Amino acid sequence: MRLSRLLPALLIAAGLALPAAAECVGRNLLEALPSKSQAELRAAAERVPYHHGLFWQAVKGDQRITLIGTYHFDDPRHDLTLAQFGPDLDTAGALLVEAGPKEEARLADAMRSDPALIMDATGPTLPERMSEDDWEALWKAMEVRGIPAVVTSRMRPWYVSVLLSISPCMLKQVRQSGETGGLDHLLVQRAEKSGVPVKALEPWDTVFSLFDGMSPGEEIDMIRAAMPAAEYADDYAVTLTDAYFAGDSWLIWEFGRFDAYRNSGLSRAEVDRQVEFAQRTLMDQRNRHWIGPLEKAAAQAARQGKGIVAGFGALHLAGEGGVLSLLGKSGWTITQIKPQGGLANGG
Image (cartoon, rainbow, N blue to C red; front, side, top):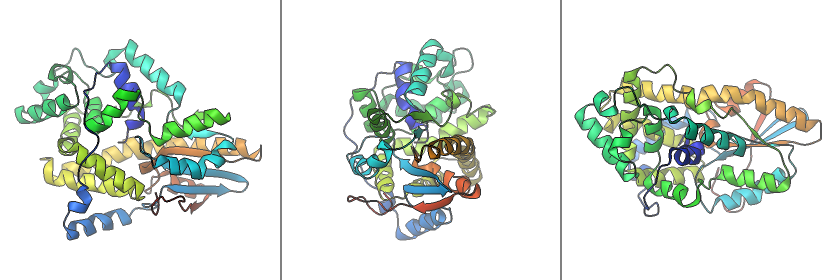
């Protein structure tokens, strides 16, 4: 889900027509694990700072940041989050999100005018770069998502990985509404209605630089590592949603690692390299770049006697390289905010 915030622009700009699909119905894969495996996963997650919880406050002197870990797809329980934090947002000096409406529009325009950003029309095709078995598994997974094999064959590997990470039932939401309907969009809509400035944490073209420097082999391994989850994507969607609203987003990150150990065909060392690369490029590297904009916006708001609200993917909160740890190292006092209105502990 790490790039799903940008999914509407990525799909619409590419002109992909997605098939109708059933609502997300599946089993919770975490609950289906043996108790020993569940304990191992939870122990791995608990070693990570700030691994549990969605809502936090950071304070430094007269500066205040309310941090909301978001889920990028539609769910009626987002209304409970808005009920709790809407009043804070209405009076905030600014709302900071990964990408605001202006950035999403620029991304979509760029991809419409330059298809080469996501398609490789001249280099070797994916079936030429993959084993026969891996290519067959890939094109079948992509066809379920409404993308013909001939189109998939020319897609850039990073874009394939983004699409594989989203279940067909979630893609249906994008097809029907033109947006993910996630908490990020709801926060933006509330801010715009209240006249609160919406600011982006990163430039609109960040997505295109995230995978620079990968070797051709690493690009294909990235696809292979994404395949196990793609094969039972609706189950993954249910598992992700349940974990998010329980405040256990990091548990899904660890589950993805352990699942790839079992099912990707990659060695543990290869999986660990993929996971570490993904964490470094998709989260930690971006988190470091976000601290400056957060602190600048908080300082500006404090001069008006206000705080700011920041909403971004919940996985960015946790970890030594997470936003909360980075703010703590920069002198901010971090406090968890207890959820209200019927949300579970931490979510």
